[in-house]
Amino acid sequence: MGGARDQRAGSKTPDNWPENLDIDALLATGWRPTPFQEFVLKVHGRCDLACDYCYVYRSADQRWRTQPRIMSLTVAARAAARIAEHAERHRLTHVRVVLHGGEPLLRTPHDLAQIIELIRRATGDLAHVEMTVQTNGMRLHEPYLQLFKRNDVRVGVSLDGDATAHNRHRRTPNGGGSHDLVAAGIRRLISPSYRHLFGGLLCVIDPRTDATSVYKGLLEYDPPMVDFLLPHGHWSVPPPGRVQGDPATPYADWLIEIFELWYGGTRTTVTVRFLAGIVNLLLGGRAAAQGVGLAPHRTVIVETDGGIEQGDVLKTSRPGVKRSGRNVLRDPFDAALRERQVVAQQLGLAALAPLCRSCTLRWICGGGFYPHRYKEGAGFANPSVYCPDLYRLIHHIKARVGTDLARSSAVPA
Image (cartoon, rainbow, N blue to C red; front, side, top):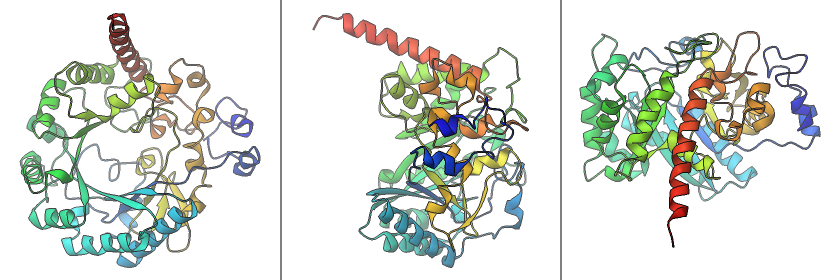
């Protein structure tokens, strides 16, 4: 990995890293990219909500304005063929396909059925395809649920807690709250006919809300999984309440309250993915959550026009930063594996800033979520803008789990 070390933060040319990363030199050291395993298809490029924290429509990169509103069946068919091609080339036995947006349920059930069929037909017996749709839940009515049941498509829903917390940010274009419509959609999803399709809830953290109320609001629906996401921001445009040099850790404080409710509670059927990922890493395992650990990033985005991109959240840094110039209409996914932003997210320890590489928590934190490291003029060769929060949160979990392990080992067999 020496070639990567020479070009990351701390070298003589760290400006806008990884734009100065020499991929050929890196490959000469013996490093090889990890194939993609999750494919996010932007089947609709618009949304029927106007969330004030949206990383697509309120970010620095506004290319969505010039992209097609929907993914055509021609693009969907090529994306499906490229997924099959990638699975066969890398002998993948399992891939995950996420129907995303915008809001994917702005497509009709008939449209989505055609896209699903294209993907299933292309992959055939090459690999098992785990298919998921990520929706805001407002249009989650019977025709969609019946479609997902027929095609074994799991459903993830975005919900920010109880009505007060949810409606603070997730509003309709006319300014009204969306909680009642989302709650009705989730209730239909968790009815006996469709309960098995429920993949979980995604909740964006707002430290100004009451953590306990938010958590209880989510548990009302008995989700199998809850994923708490830190609001997207970075050093040049910090997230709300995250002030450089301020010792306060509002996001850690909020998540620690959630951790105690989850870890210390009697309810064990729900997985809080971000916190479970930290616990698993502390115990020597692997993390499935984004933003922790050093495992290679294996997700790729296909935009409505077929563009192959590294990740939506990179839009929050600056215009054009996430564009690869690749397109499924002419390029295989392997071509994107050589893109600098993709490589940077697969280098593990070698991609971390000097401060992160010297930190005792580097194997757990992993430098934080890659887009949260951006700083104008230095690129992504920085610690996470959430570094103080992550440090406090991980130390708290480490102490709590360590105490329990010590107590259990002291009990006579």
